[in-house]
Amino acid sequence: MLGGVAMTIYEFEGKLPVIGEGAYVFPSADVIGDVTIGKHCYIGPGARLRGDYGTIIIGSGTSIEDNCVVHARPGEICTIGNRVTIGHGSVIHNCVINDSAIIGMGSVISDYAEVGIWAVIAEGAVVTNKTRIPNRSIAAGIPAKVIGNIGEEYIKTWTEFKEIYEELATTRYPSGLKRMAQ
Image 1 (cartoon, rainbow, N blue to C red):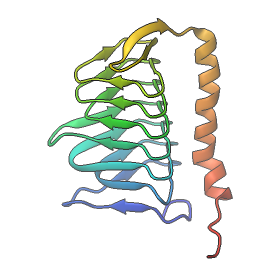
Image 2 (cartoon, rainbow, N blue to C red):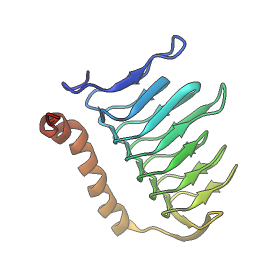
Image 3 (spheres, rainbow, N blue to C red):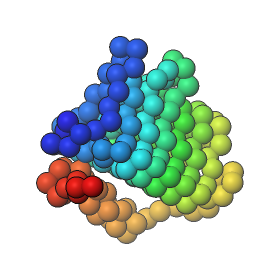
Image 4 (cartoon, rainbow, N blue to C red):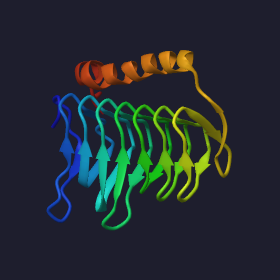
């Protein structure tokens, strides 16, 4: 139980998830094994974080939205930085996503790829194996290619969106979500 809400958290082969203070894991999300979730993170409905044979490390203030899958290869690490936004239905596999990056809905970030600080991956894009997306770049397509850069106004707007998810995690869901009688 976290904040009075039952979650689906699993120990796997002696590996226990670690969930930071003020993080909110939605009751229908699964967190399995060798997973570390930082402070004030939001893990949405249906998300699956599988640290069964690899390790997952998530920084503070990150939101992993509805129906995302996060996984790592055997003995390897999938790293997601601080204040990252991962849009609904994305697949994050054995990669590095640096601080403040924005991963659009339905995107795939594949093995050994790296997404830079404040980089933006467009909705539905596929960042293929070993691809590097530079800091503050916008990448789109299949396979994802850099199509531009973001500016200060974009960062300001998205900082506000990221703060909304932190508020959902730390305040609104813990106090406002009530399971209805069936």
